[in-house]
Image (tube, rainbow, N blue to C red; front, side):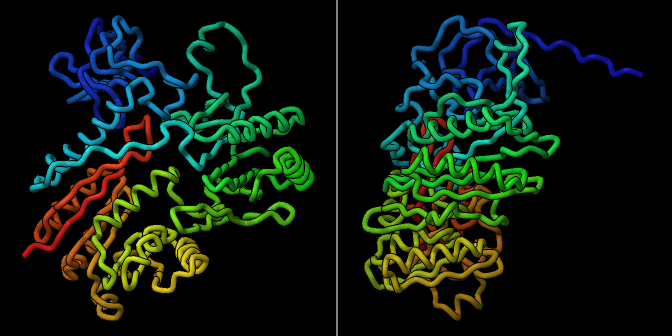
Amino acid sequence: MSRKKGKELPVIEDIEITGIAAEGNSITRHNDKVVFIPYGAPGDIVDVKIDRRRSSYSEGHIVNIKKPSPLRVTPFCVHFGTCGGCKWQHLPYSYQLEFKRQQVVDALTRIAKIPFPEVNPCLPSENQIRYRNKLEYTFSNKKWLTFEQLGSGLEFPDRDGAGFHIPGCFDKVLDIEECHLQEEFGNRLRLFIKDYAKRNGWSFYDLKGQSGFMRTLMIRTLDSGQKMAVMVFGENDKAKIDELMDAVSKEFPEITSLSYVVNLKVNDTITDQDVIPWNGSSPYIEEIMGELKFRIGPKSFYQTNSRQAHRLYATAERMANLKGDELVYDLYTGTGTIANFVANKCKRVIGIEYVPEAIEDARINSSINKIDNTEFFAGDMKDVLTDEFIARHGRPDVMIVDPPRAGMHADVVKVIKNTKPKRIVYVSCNPATQARDLADLYELYDIVEVQPVDMFPHTHHVENVVALTLRG
């Protein structure tokens, strides 16, 4: 029996967007139900097509802007509304900062439900475009067609593209003409490689069929001026690989580190793959932050907004209130950026991180900066940070924690409370899970300062730094 066609969902006419909601969507209400709508601005009068209904909310998209909000500004990117990134280009930057601060206030109020001081204004990013030092592009033989292209009646036999995945469509890629997130070098390199492959008739990757020669490209561009490119191929065709890498090397002599990977796996991650430097090219690049150098390899984690990362770490250091004689634990240390950043302000730093390769980078970063008062340990935080570990290495005066989006494991919070450092600095990329953990820590700690930091302009994402002191 054939499946019955679902009821056509309505278009709501002349409805006003009233605010900004989670995940960067705008919000309104209709028939006592919340409606989430991307790319709206508070004050817009719009017609909205409902795409999905749930018991407590609906989702839709704008089909017509009857009267634009006075808040609206002109988006700077031709891909706005399709790409899925930089969703707030149509909102003034000052408004973005206000809402990011409000996200933090809401999380502390609704989730933590504990006393907190007035939240500081969100620290703005020095650059609102071309601020990212790293981008990854995907080559696909299933280029996304816009609604305009689909409605044109034209045929599009050439579906090869290089760009970003369409949200919710893992096998579709939006072909990017120009991206404003990274310096112009990134656009020139991507377009050169795409055009070179097209001229030679090389296959772009089929994300469903898991086949094809051209797979992904990672580009890093640092404030130091150094540049990295890592080309990932889906077939081990040495002749074609050599031809393309040689062409890139000659066309872009400014590349400091040029490498490639042959990835025959199903997923795109290269952490478990061999990265092969091209013709003696450097395997790493170096970024300068203040007086420190940080060595970055193809697999290294490094904050993607270099200048704002400096402000973030300076904020964490200030909140740590170091006098010079403290033992500091840096949990989720990554490549040791915060640990090395604060090392000259304290007696000793111990960093703990899950990824062994990151710990190796952390040790290298200490070495090249002639820092000799750091120690780094690899392992799952809840397994490494135990009462026995602290008895062996010393009870910290200060803990700096910078966990992933999921926040801290309950066992880690328990050890922190048992350890009772005098001061905790909690850096988070997710105010919601941070608020959950702060509620648990409130048994012993008071919040004394809250500082949001904007690492990703034109998105809803916000970093937040909280200082806590041991009560009593």
